[in-house]
Length: 347
Image (cartoon, rainbow, N blue to C red; front, side, top):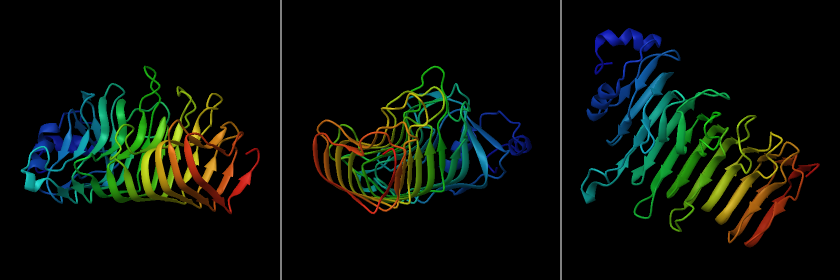
């Protein structure tokens, strides 16, 4: 609030303000300070633009889950960006470390349009996203139309994102009458080495999570742990078939523990799948996970085209409500194993 005119404080805190605060928040971020957003669940910070976190160790936080209400129409831009020095620094200063955003609700009208809600750039080390939620519920807007993903962790061939943490988050999609394909993806991770996603729910997206890039052999996801993550793309209304809880383009040595993959809760979702593999999946472990097909979905795993599956292991947990083959093999597949997995009919 040190950067916001005093006459706006009360209306921000009680949620009645619709004044664009982009310039004030931008000045605050440029100060390099850690920024505290006071308020509670009723408070609202309206932003007709972006938030760009540029400095080392900069932390934006609120203990009260205040609303960051993004109202802009910028389909080529991201609402929140965690940036390395590649856009504005010398070659020797290309990384940024320990940027964090904690304790917010991200909302917006149905007319808002962004590429991603949160974007993490290549060359960032130890970025942290914790206790961030979107507005949940069918037909309720959080950011209008997203062209890429709610959370985009975007490493590339030049530099990966390193040691990312996503914890205690809820990312929920919405129905969209103009285009049921939006938003396409909940969490899209590519070019990332190490990291954890914990106690996070992603639902009502065509793809809840995507690992790796569809067209980049070196932008893979390596050595990540997913713990108590719930992926559920199914939505009762305005959703096309062909959904996937998890889509793997390129992932190596990743572990899923105590996760839930639920897909198929709708009469037209018969060609959706829990896990779709269209690239390379190597040394992927699913431990004590639950797979649910709601007695409509045919397949737990689907391996497409020229995909290469090199050692996937499913141990513990349960598989229930799938109506077709347990796994569909195509392309090059080596060793998909199941150990002590409870399978309930009609799978």
